[in-house]
Length: 159
Ligand SMILES: CC(C)(COP(=O)(O)OP(=O)(O)OC[C@H]1O[C@@H](n2cnc3c(N)ncnc32)[C@H](O)[C@@H]1OP(=O)(O)O)[C@@H](O)C(=O)NCCC(=O)NCCS
Image 1 (spheres, rainbow, N blue to C red):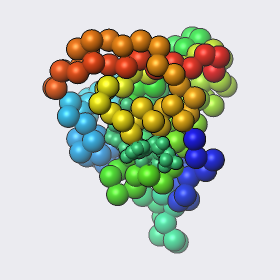
Image 2 (cartoon, rainbow, N blue to C red):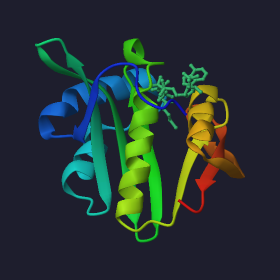
Image 3 (spheres, rainbow, N blue to C red):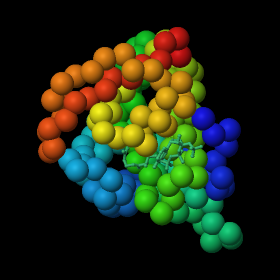
Image 4 (tube, protein in one colour):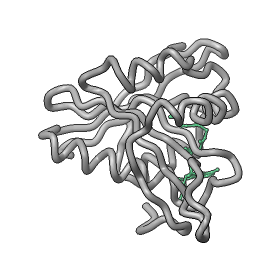
């Protein structure tokens, strides 16, 4: 995995004010995107969930939200639930940094293993997770809809 992002970044929790931009990136990134309501539940209604944002630090002009990650820590298990980076900001280590932070948060909260699922055709994401230390542990046939596709289950243990 990249040792550090190639743009200056800060990783901080999302707020309600971020939802318009998160939902836009989500809609541009996935064939079956999460709805705004689903992100609202992660922000306010899920005691296990965290929604983190990656913000590019701009020269003297503030920050711009370029990516986000949702993860759950359910007792001993860290579950990576959602991750996307705005298309113009990709391949600069933003996702790798978000994954690194989620793994660190899981360890801090006592998780012993991490798990995620990814569309079988999503080569960029599978490579990202492999670089982060995940390995394929199962394949679920026809798990996804819109379009129908297998899910690759990836895990990391010990975390
Ligand atoms: C997958 C995604 C999150 C990667 O975000 P990113 O910020 O561009 O990723 P990074 O720059 O941190 O890349 C880290 C590593 O992942 C792999 N990777 C990322 N994008 C890749 C691509 N387009 N092709 C091949 N490998 C890729 C590489 O191994 C890369 O390391 P390298 O640049 O040193 O080769 C981004 O492409 C995205 O938002 N895609 C649409 C949504 C999605 O698929 N989310 C994941 C759902 S499980």
